[in-house]
Image 1: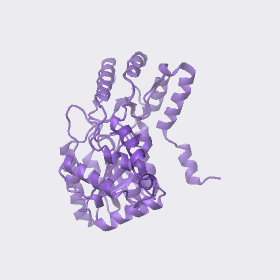
Image 2: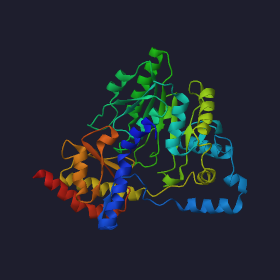
Image 3: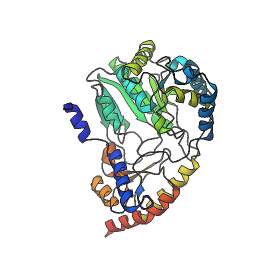
Amino acid sequence: MISKKMVGLVQNSSVIRAMFEEGKKLAAIYGAENVYDFSLGNPSAKPPQEIKEAILDIINTEDTNLVHGYMNNSGYEDVRDGIAKSINRKFATSFHAENILMTVGAAGGLNVILKTLLNPGDQVITFAPFFGEYRNYVDNFNGELVVVPPNTINFQPNLREFENKINETTKAVIINTPNNPTGVVYSEETIVELAAIMSRKEKELGTSIYLIADEPYRELAYDGIQVPYLTKYYKNTIVGYSFSKSLSLPGERIGYLVIPSEVDDFAEVSGGANVANRILGYVNAPSLMQRVVAKCLDAEIDINAYNRNRELLYHSLIEYGYTCVKPQGAFYLFVKALEDDDKAFANAAKKHNILIVPGSSFGCPGYCRIAYCVDYSTIERSLPGFKKLAEEYKK
């Protein structure tokens, strides 16, 4: 008999994954080319050629123990040093190897830092819409996720509501920019105001409040828009990063945490995160992929394919009568459902073999997420279905 807590988790398992599985079933019935699966944020851009070359070179030339053996729980020293120097070049920061902890993707990194920081009952604040797994990650350590209601005008964080929710039990704030599910990039003005509120509240409450920046989509930004690097705006910032999207390596589960020396209680936080990495069962990030990404820190995927998808899908849906804030990054459109019930709307789309995810999964009912990290031809073939769906609601 599984635990009562797991019974609830199984019953409320990820809607995104459920839609993905539904897509496979529909493909078996109608043919994969006739099913338009926009459910999962699974990168369609190919990994850079440098990845393949690095894997082969490492396997063929490096010592077996270095490729497959254990290392410090925080990761290989030379890998962490290389990542720190790369961040410094890009963002004019001053990190060292001691500020980097290699993790099992961004999700592993978030669990590591939450394990390190949270006491039972501590609050973690995030902004709707948000990646639904945050709720589970916080609950893993008996914390409480507090959600700031969405600002559906432009999906920048609702900072007035945010300030009202901070109290003496607030331990951390999670933000995700470019955002999943909206694709919105939080502006520098927003970040400056957010940092000012948090600094003011720290002084008022006499406590440390950590800003956790979840950044798997950092490199996926369009039209020349700049994504602020948050450690430069707020002292107690910890960055969680993943190569899943930037190098199209989601299944390899490789990422890192940046814990700046300036954060309050740095030695304790850094030491605690190292221990958390081990006792959560990760032990260390995948050894081979640590060495691979260290050789590919300047490699890039071609985001022009995503941008092409974005332009076609966004402008087509607007033409058909849908409402959506144009995404500035990531590879998602967050479209207003054509009825109040976003789940019913997602089911209506399914009749046209279109799979989208209800916004209620992201704490924002009345909307649906469309992941456009698919082949361009998939979007082209889906458009008649989106048009028919809109016409049905007009009737």
